[in-house]
Length: 224
Image (tube, rainbow, N blue to C red; front, side, top):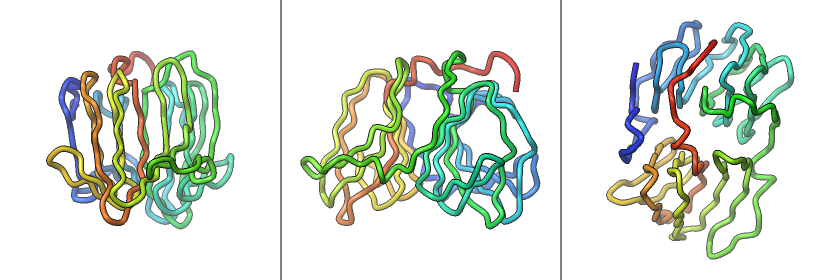
């Protein structure tokens, strides 16, 4: 399966308007944003766990990165409330679920296969002081990518000229980029040669942002 797999093109998906698609596990549904592959895939998705649902134990051969959007995600390592950002690198494993239900934004098979750095962080706790209406927390940085949490005041302007592509998911509020009004769960991906210029709406905006990663985009090479 290929979905939004041409990384030279600008893509906008208003995920809140998309249908849920059942996963192989009962009670776990997905809204796919981009994908190369079938059940073993380089994938970006929003995943919903119904109360009491769970995935079977599995190993992250290609790594897993996720952000809890609502509810509480759980595994044998602990509870992850809304606003928690987690990186589970290649070779890690867990048995995920949600006793009361939750929704996460997740990216699979997008790690350096030699990466072994595992961590979790509460995004809001990392915010720096606001500058020109923008407050930003750098959540992760390596040679391939930078992941940030950004909080914009009303009508604040967000610009970025990072090489290697730009991707953002609106978490709260809204902003306008180009001809598109982005609302909660709107996902934008800009190609390598594009710059970001967006303006927050009257209620400001909060978003998760990634830059630099598109040159490394490829289908899974081994494992599950």
